[in-house]
Amino acid sequence: MSRTYEILKKPLLTEKAVNENSNRYGFIVAKDASKGEIKTAVEKIFNVTVTKINTISVTGKTRRMGRFEGKRPDYKKAFVTLKEGDKIEMVEATSK
Image (cartoon, rainbow, N blue to C red; front, side, top):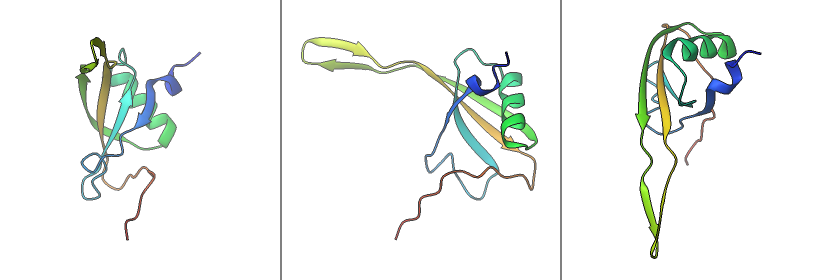
């Protein structure tokens, strides 16, 4: 079975990741996913052409609750640049 739908976990919907002027989109991806796997997953799911991928491995923060200490999970971000003219429809919030 293909891992296509297991690679992309959720989109990043921050102001920087969803910049209207650039053709870049951010995703939270599986920690063990390679750039090639991310590229094929995005191209297959959204029917677009990917030109560039930047990935970042983020270490989870250490948090305390009283005397107990815990850690948030580690995760991986991928910023995908698309070919000029391609677009992914993301959830858009309008502010009034």
